[in-house]
Amino acid sequence: NAGVTQTPKFQVLKTGQSMTLQCAQDMNHEYMSWYRQDPGMGLRLIHYSVGAGITDQGEVPNGYNVSRSTTEDFPLRLLSAAPSQTSVYFCASSYREGTDTQYFGPGTRLTVL
Amino acid sequence: AQSVTQLDSHVSVSEGTPVLLRCNYSSSYSPSLFWYVQHPNKGLQLLLKYTSAATLVKGINGFEAEFKKSETSFHLTKPSAHMSDAAEYFCVVSWRGRRALTFGSGTRLQVQP
Image 1 (cartoon, chains in turn brown, purple):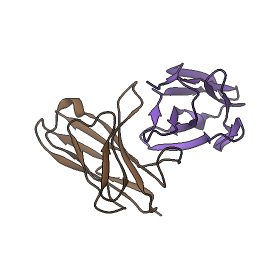
Image 2 (tube, rainbow over the protein chains, first blue to last red):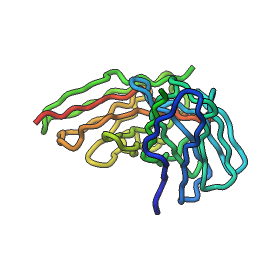
Image 3 (cartoon, chains in turn red, orange):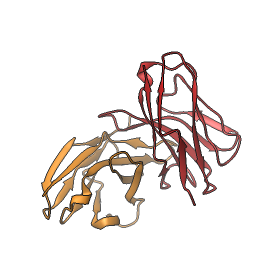
């Protein structure tokens, strides 16, 4: 199993550009989520999904879109990048939400100029 | 609102000495508690989790944590630090009925030779 994979590993954008961060898992997990990590703030939930076709907002959803057309994939779209979105982004998955162990991808480091 | 507080942002110990990383959470109502570790430029990996079984939980790499409901604490300990333990550690809480995890702000552990 590859586990949770994320692409790209690094990305530099200009303000106003759009892009999609990719996330895939091969463990047949129902629950997937996106977090951003900023210094001194831990990880904050952006969006999550409890199964194909079902998504919901987390703590910091503004400026991001998600969709879940398959169990395996959960892309995160930045609609119009802003410097405040400079961060490290992690995708995670688990069999179920809540008390289940989360499996994290290696992260995408995004810089918005 | 529920919250998680990691009491130290940085902890420095000498190799071979005990490690104590402190975590308190805001409510004792049916929490599930986790400790995750993040090595530099890596994703997060589960160290251990508490889900209402034994209050002393053993994890990987010699770490353990004790759930104390009366103190709303879940401190992480290790009897003897190793250089490879240098990393950032996150205390994470999941409350019953909530879909999202709540992360502490992290504790960076330094291990001196």
